[in-house]
Image (cartoon, rainbow, N blue to C red; front, side, top):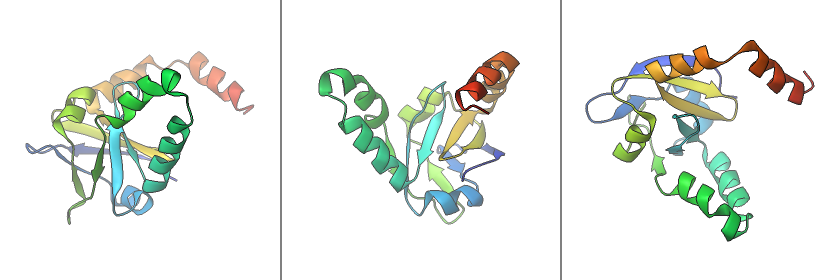
Length: 139
């Protein structure tokens, strides 16, 4: 399970360190793609395969938007010896990544956020919104 929050710097080449704890769960090769709320998703091979399978099951007329969103800019990545992955420019642009990034665990995936955007997202969350989500879980 991917949990925790880690602060890193993206270098000038667009490389970001993925925490070693996350690399253990994500595997030797994994996928980076557009995420929701202005972040990037990191998905293990099995999570990626599951996403592909679920999206492929949607009729084309209804699923073409989500197919384009997730797959058109996605990249298979492999961490280097320092645990860094190269984020393609199109994905850096999508997430507004410049230098300071936050890598978080979100149970079955990791997310990469611009640190300022992550802080703003957290400030926007209300107790009521979290409570409503918890009610969906009967928690």
